[in-house]
Image (cartoon, rainbow, N blue to C red; front, side, top):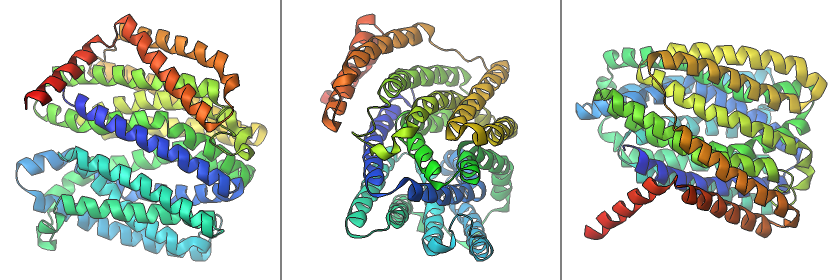
Length: 482
C-alpha cells in the first residue's frame, strides 16, 4: 500500500518530535509565567495567520503540482513562479507588520518587531519548501529536518532561559533559527538555485496556482481563525494569563494527538496525489480506508491516556501554576480526533481540485465557533472556548462526511475499530487503578510505556495486528536478502 511505509516513518518522527515538544513545554512552564506565554501565543498567532493567509496557498499548490512538473522536467517554471510569488507577498507582509506596529500595539508587536519580522521571513520560506519536500522523494530528509528543528528549538529555549530573563524572546529566537535551518536544507536538497530565474516565471502555471490556491487562502485563514481566534477572544474578555493557561493545555494536546494527524497527512497525501493522477480510484479508496484504520489505531489510546492522566501531567511535566486548565486537555482531545477525520475528507476535495467546498465548510464552522465563543467565554471563561471548538469540529465533520459519501464511498474497517476500542478500554482500566502512584516524570513515563504495551498486546490477542506483523516480517526478510 502506497504511503504505509512513509506513514510509519513519519509517525515515529512525529512521536519523537511530540516528546521533544512536551519537554519543551515543561521548560517553558518552568521559566515563563502564564501571562508571558499568553502574550507570546497572541504574537505567534498573528504570525501564523499571516503565513496561512498570504503564503500557505503557494505551498499547497506546490504540493499539488510538483509531481506533474517534475515528471515533465519543468522545475524551472515551477520554482521560479512559486518563489517570485513568495517574494512579492512576503515583502507586502513585512510592510504591513511595520505599519501595524506603528499605529497599533494591542498585542505588543512593537516590543518584538524585529523578531516578529525575522520569524515571518524564515517561517514563510520554510512553509513552501516543507510542502515541496513532502511531494518529493526526500522523505528521510524531511524527517531529519523536522527532528533537527525540534532539537535546535529546544536547545535555544533551554540555554537562553538559563542566562537571560526574557522567555518570550527565547521562543522567537528558537522559531527563527529552526525556520532558517529548515529552509536552507530544503533549498540545498532540492537544488533550487539551478531552477530560479525571473525569465522562467510562467503566467500559465501562475494562473493554475491561483485557481487552485486562492480558495485555500480562505481555508487556511479561516482555519486559523477556527483554531486560534479563541485566544484573542479570551484576551479581549479576560487577560494574558488565561490565554497562557489555555494555550499550554491546548498545545500539550496538539503535541500528542496532533502528531498522529500530521504523520498520516504528511505520508498519505503525496501518495494519494500520485495515485489519483494515475487514475486509480479504487487504490485511493483503499488508501483512505487504511488511513482511517491507522489513524484510530494510534489516536484512540492517546485520547484515553490524556483523559485519565490530565491531572498527573501537572507537577510532573508541566508546572503546577498551569494546572487550573487541566480540563481543557481532555476536551481538546475530542476536537483533535474529529479534526483528523475532517482533514482526510478535505484531502479528497483537494484531489478533485474542488477547494471551494473546503472553503465553504470552513466558513460555516468558523461562524458557529466564533459566535458561540463571543457568547459563552465572558460567562464561562476559557473552558467555553474548548467546548465550542469541539462542537464546531463535530458538526462540520458530520456534514463533510455526508457530502463526501455522495462523491466517493468512504469505508471504515468497523471490526478493527471495535477491537481498538476494546483494547483502549482495557488499557484505560489499568491506568485508572495505577494513576495514584504517579508522582514524578519517571513514573508517568513508565505508566505510558506499560499502557502502550498493554494496548498493543490486547490488539495482538484479538488478531487486529496480524497483517501488520506479516508486512513487517516480509520487509525484514527483503532487507536481509538485499
